[in-house]
Length: 81
Image (cartoon, rainbow, N blue to C red; front, side):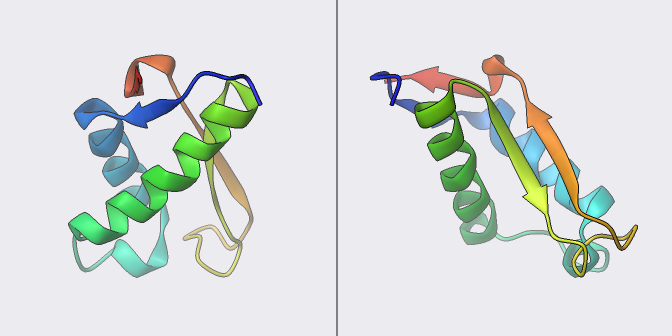
């Protein structure tokens, strides 16, 4: 672990929402809920806490392109706790 904890901020939640709406089959016809965004943010925060870089991964069967896709989130998507 890096020792520093991070929390996804509003910019990060907006970026996650954008990624999901554009790339996830489950969100092509409906907006992600707050709970959906918080769940994806928790994965991104864990990645940032442990590795110091953050990305989210959409599985192939969930992706609009039917392949595994990884999307990086910039450091400005997080606040240091």
